[in-house]
Image 1: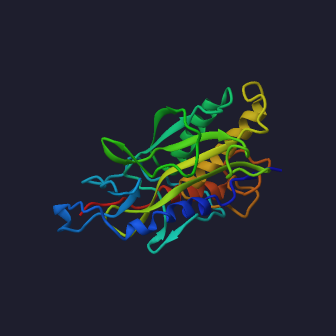
Image 2: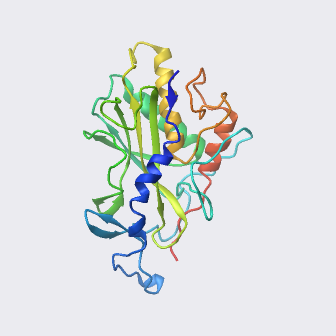
Length: 267
């Protein structure tokens, strides 16, 4: 039985910790509204770059999800202020990797993202396609209209292409733990999902295979929005693939909680 993305957040946190030294410094950027307080910064190709500013008037982009579901769930990462979650005032931009993408896989990825968005009360925006292979060592920040957090990427691969995939791993997923521009509270940014294509067959023609792959993507997106593995085998966030192809009660409670975090605020 394939395992589903072990606690991949451990791996992604390890990557983020590579930036930890940069948090102690700043790029020298001064914001008058913060009385000269320098922004937190990260190293980008040997240069310290200030983290993006939050919106001047933070407001949730989607309502908080209210659910009666009750079950077992845990969060991937806990900070000093509680679980590390997404900023619900900002959209999660994402891209789909065309590298090695099986025929018929795109609609499954789109459906999985829409499903997570609806149950977490978070907004995802599809930015299109990338030809790059999905990887966990990509940049945290990318240059756009100023520096921005890199989009989440959903991609495909095999154990031969990605060291994050093992012989019995169906997929891996996680996000970057990063402090706010000024505050110490940490948030989840960017993110990566890699689905192992070694054993994928007949996605287009097999409804059972479609349901299985969609469930794997949903599971890994659960990690991207902050959920850890569940101990209950009736939950989709259980670490080993079972007959479950949709969210269990603990998953639903966890997703609603994952999307109900605070917004990063600008003073």
